[in-house]
Length: 573
Image (cartoon, rainbow, N blue to C red; front, side, top):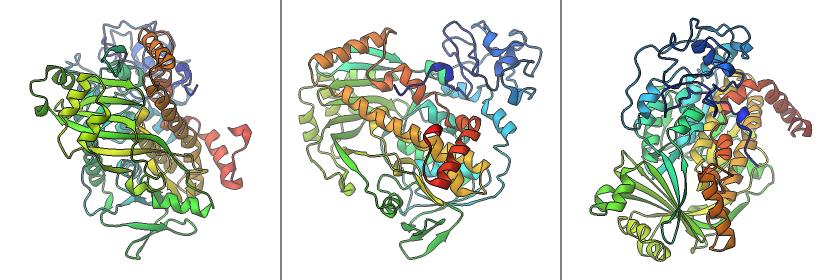
């Protein structure tokens, strides 16, 4: 199993038991105790007790009323398990209880307690200026490139982002914003802006394709925010792109459009050549140029390897349905007005739907057998305009609720995306050039982690290039030590989830549905990994920035071995 025990999950952002009124940085165990995970113990500051012994009255907010929580000190007590930060002054939230409108997430974010990562930053000097300010060239102004740029500019490096397009326009459809990337965006200073544009999904409903029967549900918000220290939301990709672009400009990043990169340096020194023949030079090149990355291809060819791309046999329609198209359909409007994710599962495919843009648009992604059989190596044709009549034919036998929704899709506004699986690369970096995002771990959509994993890359790069800027290749080796195994595990989980979601009707499907019902009642694992609580702890609960800092000696030792000898010893795995 790819999950890790809940006892080892590091929850960094302020955790909230939102169904009640009490807060804690570690989330709550079933018995109501504050989780003591052995780092930065905010609970000590509000309770006057060790975190693991703090039994809380759930009807109060300890951070808002320290006296009521029994606290007379703003320092950790003697014996606090977090020796690294013992004695560090803990800021408090003062004032009356917060009035929480609607889902209340924006208010929760604005009033959350301090992020324990800040204490680690002070202790470990993460936010001290790097020993060497780097000139960083980022190829690609998508989510991965902009996030990495913001993170590196934030700690004093000088970032230039180049993109081949003349104008960075906002395109795309709905996407999920998981806790593991939301907490990093919080550290990058953009979470409040992102939250303003998010819908926060309260639960996911798992349903049968033929009759719309509900097999079970999996609770999400607000419990996810309480457990993992950051919310789970959905947003239009265009809105996220715009927020990141504006944040990058505000940070002073040099963004150059109409700059098409054709190659990196042959020895992978920190320089790239533009289409007009000009060379841009720096100290580090970050390739965030996506699934069709020219730099990825160059690195693979340099190693005399092949980029193995395998068709999954699936394609996906992506559609957006405006509210006005649903007029008169009570069921469709009920889906739009509720913050609930809907997953219909059928033979050979499934559908995911949820509202975005303040419940004004319904987003759907529809996975189905690929009839076009596009050559997996011919990436130019992986995305194409979809045909509505063809889409309706694919789903002609699905339940009336689904067919009605699809009938509201505007003509000419359907995209069809052929889904291919990429084999893992032998390495994500070469000398002073590194791959991030889809250029090194393109994700299938079955666990909705594409953007999250790209933003995790950005968070780890910020950590390693704050600590180890004097030796760029070594810093990149540390980045890879932290990120590669995890990123590829998430990649693999998507393929596993595809199999479960697309089972043909029969005994295997009936067994899957039985397990979903049991998981909904709180017993057993959910075969839909995205909705499985154990896998969520691995997927959403892992904090890669904390992992980089806390396990720095281990990662550095492993990276030095890789850096010097080109391989990782078994003993270090």
